[in-house]
Image (cartoon, rainbow, N blue to C red; front, side, top):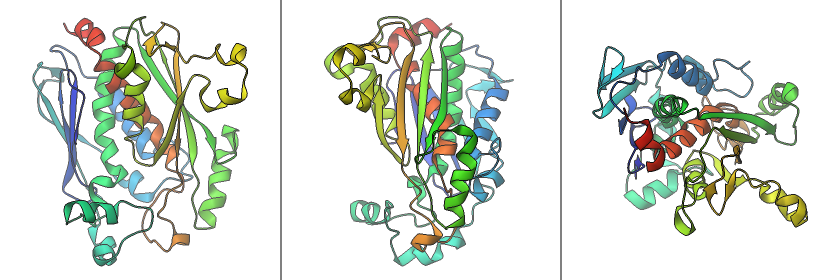
Length: 310
């Protein structure tokens, strides 16, 4: 499945080392002036160009990530029709992966893709590559802009790398693993402010269920919790029930919505015998992707999308 949403839909396409990646976004109202600076900033954050560099792959920083608008936009303003865009893979190097034509990388989707489809794109993982998330960031940035017009803001941040919880020490901590040819994971926290009361429905349409589905679709994401989360198991009810995460019965209660997600260490490392341009900590660049998927989830709720339309 390459399409997300039903009232506000996003379809992504392209592979890591193909000519381009991109997407088609349907449900954006007419008359929205696209905030190109927001898109550019979010793409730069995803590429690690705004970070010091610890844990970020060389390819991520080399790709220009220039967005080409193919349809649905005129003079920077949306037409209300499907918006198609692409980002050309200008720094693709498929030859770097020639050795993988006849072998599988440990802890990657190589073997499962081939077992399921009988064929796979061995050039950097194809659709299983995190390169695909650049298209999510573009789509999510448009959703963020729409939500901002309703006073809804989304902010995510890296709060833990391995066992280190002090942000000022993250780079040093990651660099130690990079020097050893290894990698490390991290935890991201996301908060949404300005949500009205009443989004979501009981049982199978809870807000946290939609968020978990979206966030766990991000490459390397291994866990999701909200409110008191897993820590709540060690808290008495009188304490845990003070941290609902902005949701009661799966419905927003108008207080800040908060959740966390955990990203595994990069499986492709020199220590694992894998050569190439890989991150030492994928969580560093996943922050804007988490924001993007959160925005796509919220924009898909009919209660919000109907109010956003002009």
